[in-house]
Image 1: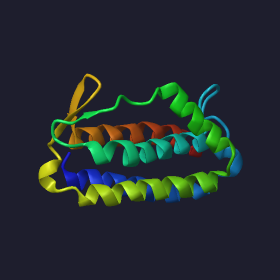
Image 2 (image 1 turned 30 degrees about the vertical axis):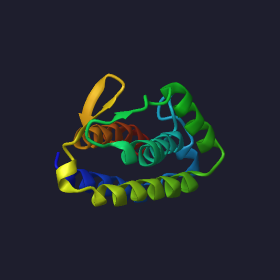
Image 3 (image 1 turned 180 degrees about the vertical axis):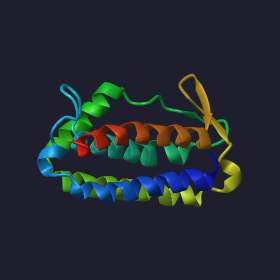
Image 4 (image 1 turned 45 degrees about the vertical axis):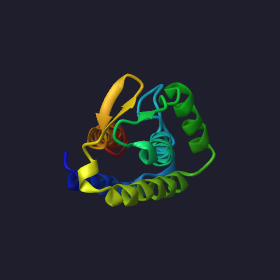
Length: 152
């Protein structure tokens, strides 16, 4: 994916968040399947990873850099779910939009030539382009889960 495609995918996500106002609070706080997250928890999960990426990843994605390992996923996601439980779905969506828009603004500022710069996270070597291509796939995975709730 090229920079423009990645930024477009991020904008598409923000626009999709706007469509979620059609979900009732009850639907938004009910797991999409037994034992799984609710749409509210999913959106907060994505928003918290956006925040982490903005604060703890993007500033350090330089050629040859070694970034800190990712936080422990289970604990990080559990904290996001706990935060989601303390607010309405509307508040979660607003927060998610702010976090993604902040990220988009930074992505737009990255020089086209820097998108291929490689850095390391743990034992994985990847570029900004690869990182955000994976990011978009992660979004799509969770969007499908939420759309299954909307389709009921």
